Length: 540
Image (cartoon, rainbow, N blue to C red):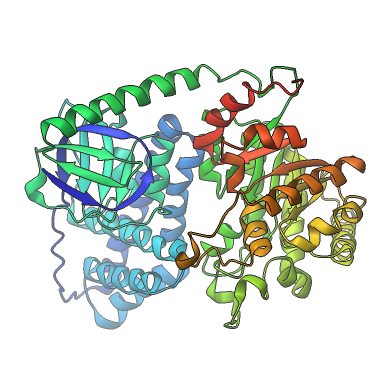
């Protein structure tokens, strides 16, 4: 038996045979071409065919994994339309009089290396999209039809790397798990794995020799066992059976209210980072979106996302949620979340530096662009907006003034918008201590327990050396949550938690007894938390 450890992308247990997938080598040879116009036309036809293929894949993804996951192939279509990408290819064909395949391959290498060199995980993950699109065009130029996988039995797919178009073409009924060497937990393929609810790992150095061997994937611990011994096999068969039984019981909660035994209704919402997460939220019976991390739109872009780009994303989420509340957190860039084009200076203590609302109130052009997009989208659903990293009443009043300016501009331009609730993140001790004053200014509070814990305990949550004393259950943190709830309720604010603690089922009853109105968690934890809510009797 061989045990290999990596990183978990999605939890669960898979037991089965390995199907090692390796792409057919794309031998791209540089050739001199005589007729440049003919070669440019050849490339243009291949580009058009690639767009058609991606549209077919988009429609297939919509049918099989929902609108959210299908957005991946719209991203790929945008790559094909990208002016810099196309100009690089056509310029090489014209200037060097070379064949299209070679120009596409060189551009793919250059662009993907540029993305992989970036510090941010989300930007690095975009390199796979560039390679995927480029390989599709090269295959078309070579007259190849693409990925075909055969076999009747469900298998564990092991590969050096899987790109989204390869993933979506697989029959999901025949896939037990994805295990890859390359790729991040934030890549599109990882998102697809989570959407398909199958165990997935990355960072596993795999060998072609694994093909056909029996394996166990432990998506909880982030490891794979190759040819497990009898004891391990029996142990994991029992774990898999228990998993299935627990999931079956949780599935029965779908459609049932998140209500305590004594009748208190709790708003049970989902945290998402993109449109692609919406389907997973709906599949797990989310009552709404409690935290849409809008900064990911910025982190996944190579330039400031336009008002129109943001509007289309927010509108899509609002429509898909069909009248359920969608709370969008405004740009929370800075600290551990960076985008190069913001040109933020290096700071000694970025967690307490120039970030989040401080950037927005300083660079109001960026802030107004986002607010306009959010308010425009509010005409298509129930949207609320909340502001991160608040420390004063003055900040909130400045925000509200900018909001009024945005609304006035939209009104003057005859642009429709709906009623938008305004809320703030309570994630600094300062905000907790003046929450009685802040509650007079807004409609709701959302407690960000991740930052609140690190600021309260003076512990950098990114510092692994301090893990042993980082205690999210610390009495000081609990008291701050309770104080926030009490002060919010006095002024008619509803109060929620959107940090990691919201999914801690050992604290669910504690939070409900404090008076928490809303819990927002990752989609995969919704049913677990609902199960705990329905066990609580607040009358006792």
